[in-house]
Image (spheres, rainbow, N blue to C red):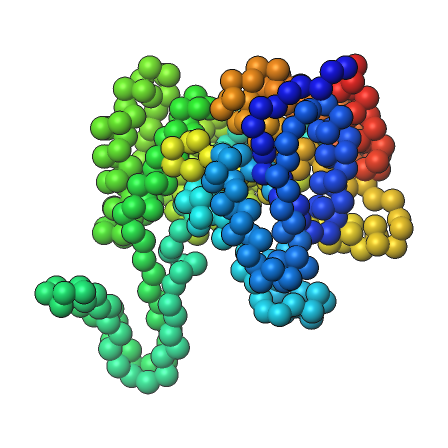
Length: 401
């Protein structure tokens, strides 16, 4: 069959360990044989980040920004053990964080629903998409240990020295700890635009959760900015698409999520999104069936990846020459979501149909009982499983026919 011509390139970001092995198999079996596609390749393995002093991560992010579409393999964020293992010059930051900051995007995590794979929350029949505002909050906090009695204060001083705001936080009569964190309006606004544009693209409702009854300035700012942008720029568009936006307190939102059947986007502040994305993943069964999309505020730039890590335990088996049964589905969906966005930007219907066909083949194959060991164990002790190479052969054969 003739290859589908793809007019514009996709930035291909390779990663680490077993995820890298799977990545190469995806391209070799499911992408290159079917698409006439220019891949702009960047090696974000921990060894190459060390060689380039992490410059390659910045270059990859800039390439995505220029070309609008990137697809990323899972990478190592090194801890002290990894520094020794790979003889690193320093503890490099998360590549995801670097790319996220350069693209100024929002992370959307969405489950891949397979009917034959049991869900912990059985009635989640549609997707709960977690939108995480990945800026500020506790991830940029400053902490202090307090040993003596005294006063903890929060102070702001304007650059022109004309405004000083100071609040007493607590009077300490015993040892304790203190913390401060922040956010900025521009980032919150970008978060809102990303969420509303994503909801319009997917045509599903969106909810923002905060605890503005307690954080009456901090969380209230999120609520007010979202409301302002929605009323002024998105309300009519949402009405035309028969979808809604609503703010809810986070404790109420958690309760609703557990009762509802899915089919919505949940916009979360940074820490809330970090926690709830993992909770939702387990509710649907597995991080191995969870996609992750980083989208710019205007919806034009995306970077896609699997939500899971580098699968170190399987890589250790692979290094010994042993066959593994490693689940590639989330990484395949990273490719299909990137291809779909490229198709949308290029108005390439054939490419869009190919991406959808590949997704449907993956879902159909799993629902017919052909799956890797991790998923088979979720189904039950009688469920048979195949190794990774066998699964790729089956998927490629179905794509060819």
